[in-house]
Length: 134
Image 1 (cartoon, helix red, strand yellow):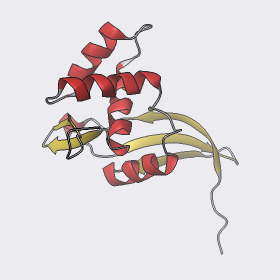
Image 2: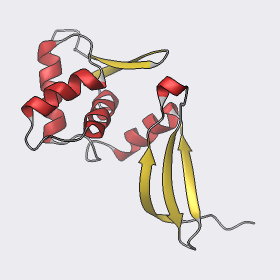
Image 3: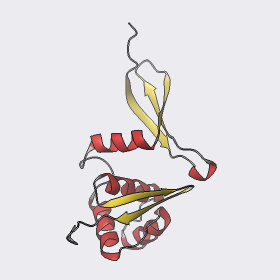
Image 4: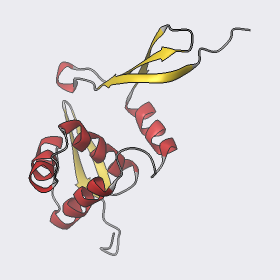
């Protein structure tokens, strides 16, 4: 039986370039024995991992909840670019755009937003309860 490859150090992640047809996030890590490791996560694997991390995981902090509150109160269709315009104008210090992207993904996993996909486009809509509450 082969020993599992143990990874304890995460270096970086690379978002897929959806306009170029990429669908997998690349997570770059280093194994305990020093070998480089690339973990490829498609959208389903990313959603599953985000669900396992839970509400205490990255992306669902006070700033993300402020974004959720704004989107739920405003309604409409929200792309990363549109959401980041609001974030950049409303949150000090201004977070980078990847914060906004990850926050939208986390808010969808936690039920605040609904993620919608068209070819080459991802956007989010508010996820209201049937009685109009949140």
